[in-house]
Image (cartoon, rainbow, N blue to C red; front, side):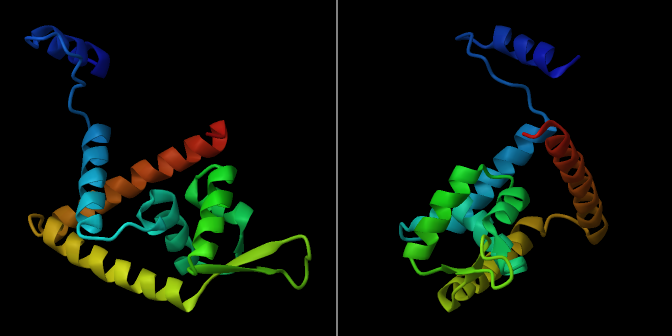
Length: 166
């Protein structure tokens, strides 16, 4: 039975005939992602870094500073206008700065400020703490297997996105 058939059966069995998608791996991954974001943002004051696009860009810059805006579009899989607006906001808030490339004057490179680096240090620490707490129910073997499977899924999705230009 496929996802659509299973969801339709669940829908027919519901007392109010509300469409309820069947539980599947991607919906569980989505729910886990949402729950993790909720845990990470719990108690945070409102700022531009609450947006997922901001966090994705900050993570990418922490891994590889001095990239171009186009590099960020490719590595985050965000749309170019989203990256542009997000970079403007992050720059205004003091988390990043931009500098014209000295060899290619058409290229603008993006860097973290000290405030941006400090924010990333705090986030990494908080994520590690939450991950430790969340994954404590798994054995080392289960944790390694989970990571192997998730990386395989991600690789497949990235390849598919690149082929179909999502």
